[in-house]
Length: 94
Image (cartoon, rainbow, N blue to C red; front, side, top):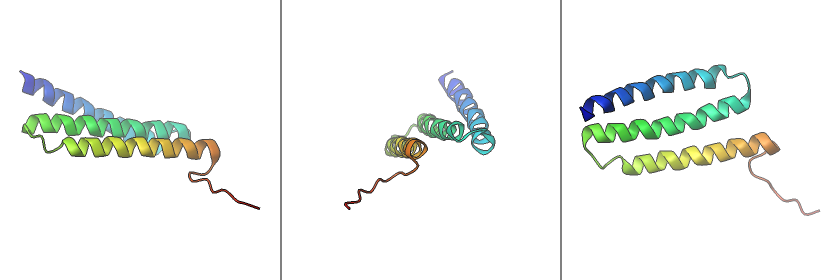
């Protein structure tokens, strides 16, 4: 029973991923695309965790952590770019 539920959840996450990819490509504004990219990162974590459960393996835990960290850093960088126009601010002493 648990295996069926996990496979259904995997299918639902895959469908959500397709919708998010569409939003990244076709999004009306840049913030919509950034939010979709962040949601893709969350879905990747969920899909990796579900695959780890199906395969009964602990080997994917580091991958889940890495995807989560990269998705967070990417979202922060995009948000800073949208707010200020630059990601890395350089101080000029003149």
